[in-house]
Image 1: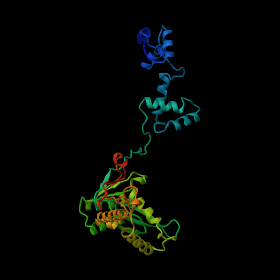
Image 2: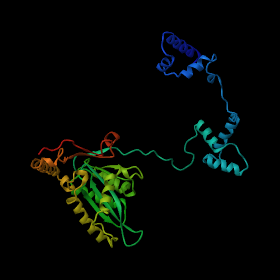
Image 3: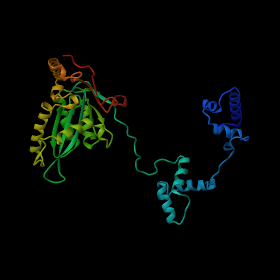
Image 4: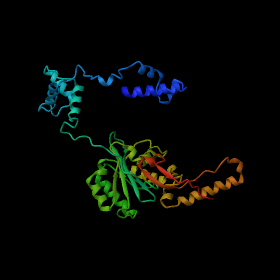
Amino acid sequence: MSSLTQRKHLIEMLATCVEQGARQSKACEAINLSVRTLQRWQNDEIGDKRPLRVQTPVNRLSQTERQRILDVLNSEAFKDAPPSQIVAKLADQGEYIASESTFYRVMKAAGLMRHRHKARPAKARHKPDALKACAPNQLYSWDITYLPTPVRGVYFYLYLFMDVFSRQIVGWQVYPSENSALASDLMRDICQRNGIGKHQVVLHSDNGGPMKGASMLATLQALGVAPSFSRPAVSNDNPYSEALFKTLKYSPHYPQKAFADLNQARAWMTRFSNWYNNEHCHSGISYVTPAQRHAGLDKDLLRKRTAVYEQAKAKNPLRWSGQTRAWRFVEVVHLNPDKSVGALKAEVITNVKYAA
C-alpha cells in the first residue's frame, strides 16, 4: 500500500522516462508496476481510500458482553469446563450468551487458553538424545516381545538385549511375566559376563514398565549404565530392537505353532541366538555376522572380499563396466541421529574402499 505522495512521485518519474523516449510498459516493468495500476493512479486524485476506512463489525461484542463471557468462564460452575460443555449446559438452562467459537476467542484474548481441569496437562515430548557407537560395548538396546502360548491371550515374554554397534545379541531370557526385577537381574548378568565397567555403556529402551521400573533404574545406577528412553508410542526411537524382533519372527526357523512351555521357548531361542550371532550375514554391517563384527574381524574380511573382486576383475575386465563392489566398513552407528546426520544415513559408512 502506497501513499498519495509516493504515487505522484512515481507518476512523475515514469512521465520523465516516457518523454526521454522510453516505452511506458518497459518503464513500469522496471519498477515492478503494471500499466493498469499506473492508469488507475493517474485518474485518482484522492489516493488509496482503504487506510481511511475504519471497519467495525456490526456483530462485534460489546465490553459488557465480553465481560459476561469471562464471568461465566471463571464462575464456580464452569471454571473446569471447556466451552463445548459450557454452551451445552447454558442451553439446557434456557440461556444463550455466545457461540462456542466466540467463547474460545474471548478466552484467547484474555490469556485463558490453558489447562482447565485437574488431570495433568500433556507434556511436550522431545526426541531422545542422539547417540552413537564406534566400538562394541558402548551402546546397547533392549526390548520385550511376546511369544505365543497354547492359551489364547497368555504369552511368554522374551527379554532381548543387543549391542547396537555389532548387532550381536548380548543377552536374552524368556520369562512367564514381565517386570522390572527380572530385567535388572538379566542386565546385571550381561554386565558381568561382558566385563562392562561403570560409565561404559548407554542402554536404550522404550517407555515400558519394566524399562522404567524402580528395580531396573536402581540396578543401572549401581552398574554405572546410563539409561536412554524412547518417546511414548514412537517405535522409531528404538529401531534396532524392533528390526531384530522382525528378523526373529519372520525367520524361516520361527515355529508355526505356539510354544508348549518355557523350556521349548528357551530351547528355540538358544538356537536362534546362535544362528543370528554366528551365521546371519547382517545387511546393516556389510554382510558380516554380528559375532565377527563384535570380535573386530570384519575389517580383514572386507579387505579380503575386496581383493577377491579385484582379482576377478583383473582376470576378466570386460565383465565390469566400472568399479568393483565396494565392501565398506561401517565406522559409526547412530541411534536417533540429528537431522544433519540422519539426512545422510542412520549409519555413516566410510567412502574409502579397502585396497586389495
